[in-house]
Length: 244
Picture 1 (tube, rainbow, N blue to C red):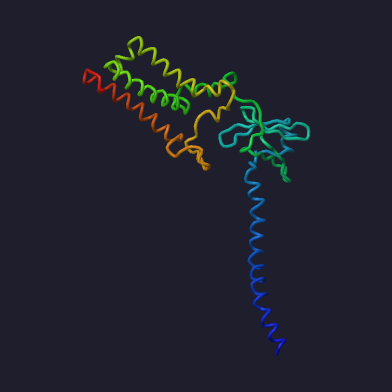
Picture 2: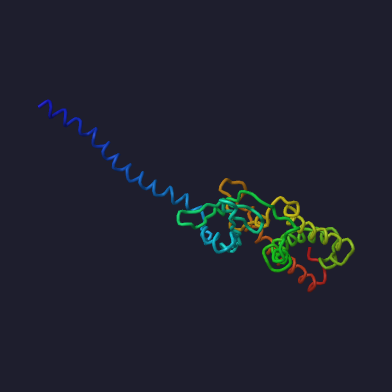
């Protein structure tokens, strides 16, 4: 009858709405579950509780998190987390008393300068650490260009240029440019120690740098330049004359 026809016509409209509601409900529950997890992911547990810090550790202690030493201290009702460079990180106390901090978002603090470099950090520039590798690579790239230009201009070998007055002068200019170009931002107080050297694992999703102008490309080119200079010197010693 007419009533049955009306009920039959109403069913197609209510069916998609019911299905849509059943589909949206699990999505909302999943989003609700993901939200707090994403929020908590930025907070790193500092492996100490506030009661333990106050009652047993005189309100101050240090913790090594992924190779970086952080200082955790209680100041009044607040907990302050800082690193060796003086940067401060947002900290909070969980319900179970564990202190956490957002180590990816420093709020500020002292900028590393040459005046407060530790012995370990200074030795990294003169040993076999990443700073020495970066500086040597940059010096080798500049040196290779200067050596090639010098050979073309004077006909002298690389060693002949190095032990001449002009060559010795320009060799020191190249080394100084590589060193001060690397540590200059640190000496000027513009960057912290952990930002001084390029990160080979860094990505640039916004296209700020082309794919061939990266820290990894610089490291490869620096090593190639060092090997290239060594081969050029050996070849010229064997041949007895300039290669270019």
